[in-house]
Length: 126
Image (cartoon, rainbow, N blue to C red):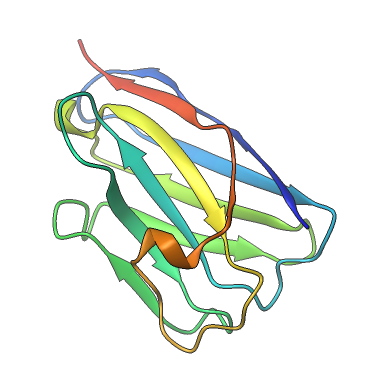
């Protein structure tokens, strides 16, 4: 079992930056496939970014490529999502998720992640 808690959401103007953190407890996430998802009203849940168990492979949604970066700090047992050049369409609730499995690939399928945080809200607005 692992517990995940997200931090770092808030209100930011268009063009701004935020860094989301996902602190894990209960088990180490060092070799765990992990991901960030977001939910926007009226839209299906979207896979924003994911990272393989080894950390050498990542996936990004086309809408965030070049602006977002997913990373993991095994010392602090924390997953991060650095979000730059934010746009209003990035507004939503962001969730981190963990598999506790050493996925070779960066998995996009939400069904492969049984552990989820409670979400943190990001609002991009002037």
